[in-house]
Image (cartoon, rainbow, N blue to C red; front, side, top):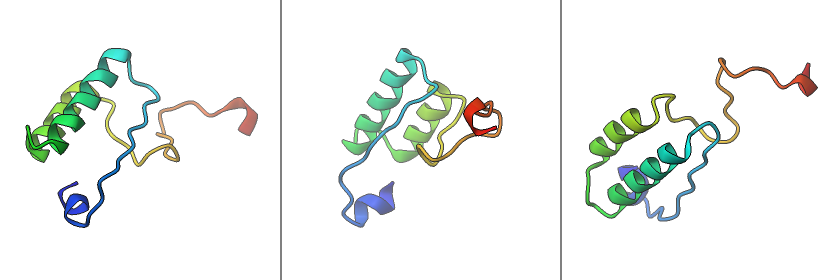
Length: 74
């Protein structure tokens, strides 16, 4: 994210699929704090690992291998 900020990227989108409401609030607050400079990006990584142990993915096109296949695609 530091490289993105240095490149001028200032708009980010978070997507949540499998997270609980509590995880969503924690993750969003952690990103807010990191982007505001209140915590380091290393601390952001630690917060994400703690808040959402299922991990961070590449976004809406990523489907983890452990997620069941959609019946319509069989």
